[in-house]
Image (tube, rainbow, N blue to C red; front, top):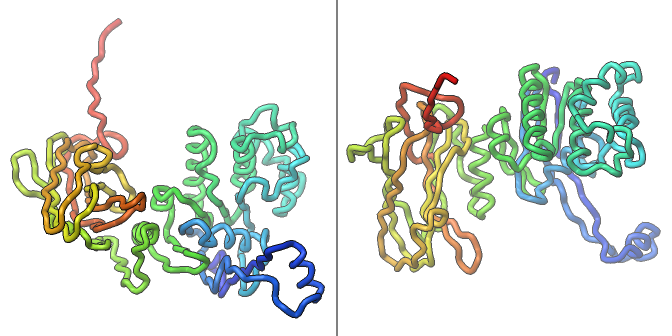
Length: 407
C-alpha cells in the first residue's frame, strides 16, 4: 500500500429525497411509521485506487457521480458506506465556493485555504507572491471574493491549489474555465506537476485533456463504475454510452500497440467497405503529405432512413481526435434513402497532417424526430501512414508561404 495515494473501497453515497420539507422533520422525529423519503444512489459500491505519481481521469455522463466521489475523497461530503484512504497532502479544486469564505477578500482566503491544508502562516508568506502572480487579478485581490466574476474566482482558486505544493492534486472541471491565456497557463502547470511525479485525479468533459494527460481512466454511469482502462478505450466506451450503445459484456482489448476496431450501432444501415486512394487513384494506407487523396465509404441501407449523415475522423494513436467532417457539416447530402439501397461516399481533400501514424474512423448517423441515432460506427478502422520530408510544429501543416525582403 506504500505506492497507493488514494484507495476507495466499496464506496456508496445515498441521498434521501423528500417531497416536502416537513416530511424530513416528521421522519427524523419518528412522528410517522411510514417512510416518507425515497433513496437515490449517487454512488453504488465503487472501488478504485490511484498510485503515487499516476494521473487518473474520471469520465461519465451528467449525474454519474464524478463530482460526488471527488468531494468524498477530499472530505467535503460524508460517505454512506465504504472506506476511503488518502496517503499524502491533498489540494483540491472543486466547484466555485468550495473552501472559500465569500465575505473574505482574496488575500484572506489564500491564508484560510493554506491553513486548512496544513501550512503555517510563515509558509504561506513564502508562497504568496507566486500565488498572486499566477492568479493575476490585480487589485481585486483586496476585495471580497463575493464580488468576483466566475473567471476571477477560478483564477484565484487554481493559483492557490497549484502553488501550495500538494502531493495529490484533485481537480473538477476547472481547467476549462477562464480565458485562453489562463487555460494555457493552467495546462503548463499541470504538465509540470506530472513531470514532478505528483499524483493527479481529475474529472473533465474535455476528452482531449483526458487523452493527453491520463495514464488511466475510470468510466462511471449512474453512480456505478462501468470500467477502467487506458484513455483511448475508455473514451470510446464513453462515446458508446452517450448514444445508448455501451455493451458492458464486451471484452476490452488493451494492446495499444495494435489498436482494434470498435464497431457498434443499430445496423439500420451498415458501412460495408472503407478504403483510401492516393492522388494516382491507387488504393493505399500511405499518403504523401501535401498531396490530394480520397476517403471512400460504401454503405448498405436495410431500412428507409431520413437524411443519413456520413462521417470520418482522424485520431492520433493516443486517441486524440485531430480532424474530420461529415456530409451534414459540408451540406453535401441531405436526402432520404430507401431500404435496400446502397451509397458510395467519397471525401476528397489535401493531406495536411504531419508525417506519422494515424487512425481513421467512420460514422453513419442521423436524426429521427430530433433524436440522434447511431446506425453504424467503425472506430479505428484504418491505420494511415503519412509520409513527409518536412514536419512543422503541431498536428498539421498550415502550408505557409514565406517571403523575406530587405527594408
